[in-house]
Length: 238
Figure 1: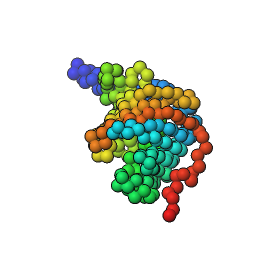
Figure 2: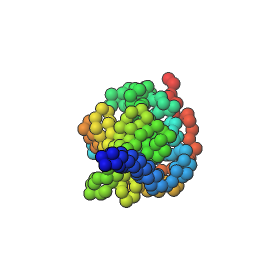
Figure 3: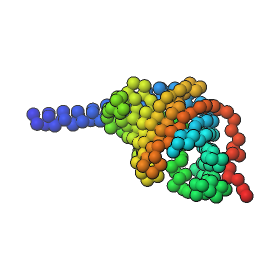
Figure 4: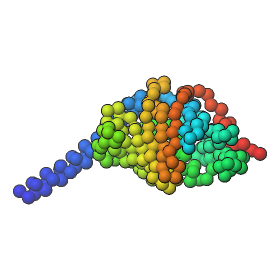
């Protein structure tokens, strides 16, 4: 009798683990479908995104030019001063105005900053094709965030970064991400998804952590698969 009970307990544990893993994949599959489907996602090679950045009472125009999985260039203008961040083939450079501790000239981006910026090369998020990327995803549970039912997924990236992602249980779109930013815990709130060329993008993104405070990005325009001159990613030579 005890043997039967032990067998049933082991069987229940195995079945539970199997269905748990299946549930994770079902959630991720529905998330990918909600974004527009893997075929439409894979069809996007370049993005040009115009945004406004609200921080400390200032409205800052921001433009990102992205070759998916390879290179990006992010430009902002603050009080007439240009800020540039570029990552190309896992290397980076930047231009910081003197008011932000820079020289106004191109300089190499520190390796730890480059590592943080690499996620920007993946505009659709780490959950899309997460197994191919070497990430691991587990289901923490179903919770309520901002009075909405969400699936709480914990993703460990291939390089060891841990991110808590919250997926709306109705839309299957990511509404919140919690991760480490500059050594401190931070949050990214995503909302106002809009479709461009069959793929949904969050048009509002609020980023907050104790060091930076809160920054709000609002997208005004997204252009898909426009030709991009690779020269814009190369560090200028004096």
